[in-house]
Image (cartoon, rainbow, N blue to C red; front, top):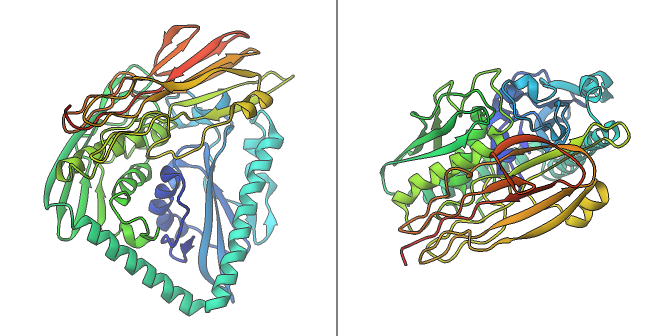
Length: 469
């Protein structure tokens, strides 16, 4: 929920990379559109308020007595956004290779559906009815949001509602500043690296200097690698989401999710670097993989100031697996992310086989997967011993083996295959992740064609340990 100026009022405790990027981009986006009652805008353009093409955002204005008072918005990842490869997470070099780019467009105009808005997408997807159903769900979610927000404003009255929003933001800012005040003033630097960009460029640095004083914090990413050929680039909104998430973890649990909590935090991100790429740089993996490394860099810097409050590095990848087939007899698209080890900390060991930091998504039950797609899960287990040692051990990764029951194509976009998740305070690094097909090792980012009977295995990274034994 956003106010009439696009400032965040409330959001779910859900997927940080989606929500933080919306909080950053909405203010600039809503000012570019002439809103009317009954409108609903659809977009996925990473350079106009999106993240990467599969993440599609629907925004609806709320008018009360003819006056614009608020917006509701939702963002969902679509497994098919019209890319040539199944799952729409290709090994790409340019934005247009990643699917259909949707600039901010009226999906509904003054209450009237606009079928042409998504026609270019529907012409390119493999199973149109599924994609149409997903968009219907997003439209319905916004309509429910509008109805409930209308009821809330009617309860309080528009003026008191907006006054209460101002009070919530002030309270959020106070809590945020109190949390940040616990960080000693100074400069804290950290450098981490992305394994590669899928196109042969390796060990791409992400560098941050966090400056802390009485006015707040500045995260300066000068020294980060320039945007690259592969798709690990991202728009600055994704970098902002990662920074916001890291600092939100330092705030009290009951801190309201509103614009006020971000006011003491500023970003300096050089244009043209990995974290503030220029069009038409490919960005499919930037949202999912580069965001996780930004978190690692920020937490690594903060650990110098608050060593007992921050964990060692977690497994550091969403371990994206996209697969499917264009077979006209049984077309299908599927996409999932896999968990791994969580970093150990001063209070104890890290958790094993969980999603960490920017993703926060549930796994897909084996029964659902096997009933829906021509796949059999041969193994799904904790990867014992993959967590880094230390006074407190890092969490273990997981292993998931897929047997294909029909020919298909699969794409993996993964990290921490070359560079292991670091330990903290003398703790050891976690084991690197591994991909293989029929026991033959694969790169971290790869697209493969498979036949019936082939077995794809993904073993995710363990996490860093904490403290010397």
